[in-house]
Length: 429
DNA sequence: TGTCCACTGGAAGGGAGGGCTT
DNA sequence: AAGCCCTCCCTTCCAGTGGACA
Image (cartoon, rainbow, N blue to C red; front, side, top):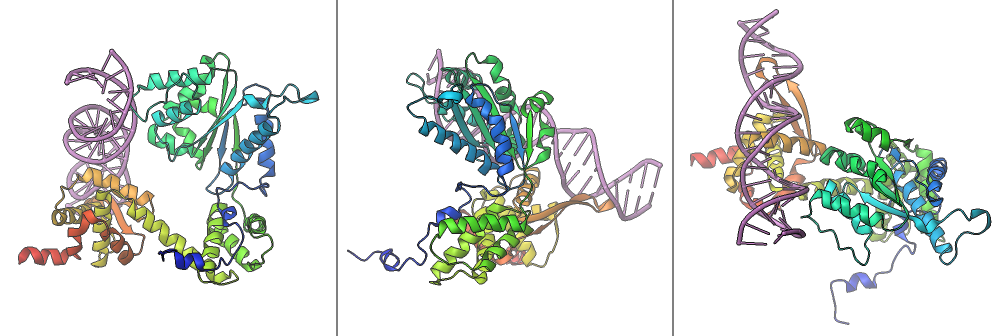
């Protein structure tokens, strides 16, 4: 075989034989420790669908990594399993009234699909038949998409359970139009029934809903509490046992540390699993036969750095320029900046990089977006007669972030402008 | 107590871009 | 080809705001 960039790594021995994918948050295990009560409650609501009736709409609340999505998808998987086990025959005996084949689940992540057109299109395209065409990415009037969606669902008698994950993102971005339509769809269907499961990180998002939508949507409510460190430890132990069955690669204190670190951040199981998985990968890369607590701390740093990097790299150009202006002012010793100062800096950066600056109004929004991403800290402060404005400071390491922004090829000319003082000097020369 | 500053942030609308319909 | 729909990004306009200061 010709030597290739990968050959060296292909020859290197795999240190851990287990399946690391089991440590990914997206993996749905056979058991969901400390969520049995919620699984049972949701199952008792959803069993109505197997009888061919419409289950109540359900709203599920809870912070990130509290098992909301996992519980819903767990039940979806159980329905699919029932379908497979009864592929050829109906239920027999006392279960004759149930028909699992008429139940359809549709899962939409509203963080990815965040427009009302997008949501309707995605649901509609799940019910393609011989005669129906694909609903296009864009172009159809909303009314047509909705009519097509109804026709497709109503083509045969069935119960459709639509899961809208991260529903608060959809509502905050596109309003409650979709929910209004979906929650009243049953009155317009002849033979099918639709039930909604909304999953949200924020309890208060229903305040922004039309009262009719709110009451239809929240027929049942479930609130998932955060996991504590002990519960996280159980979750991690179970996953590790499954992932690395015969291997004894992890000390107890590694699992305890991951659980404790994640418990500090509102009991986020996703975070705990990421820590554990990345720590394992780091240990493997270092050819260690054991994962220890040092690997966990390294994993913690790596995850934090990757988050910042990812957030900065994917920013649109003008958001990068705004961030750049904030960081450059900071390196010049300006600790806290006002919106006016950031805008002045931003215009300087635009001039040097040959771009037309946006208006201050738009930059105000960009600063709020940077704040939401956790890249800057911005809070409104009044300076009395000197006005009321935002006080802004970066919340990421300056030097590292500047170099990430400078990798953007469209911002190359800005590299020449290391400080505003340099620029002032350039202008004088 | 009223004034004033430097904005904030909502509302409305323009226009570009992607895509469908007639 | 012209007309239409939807989304996204942006501008313009403007009422509202908190608190220092006269």
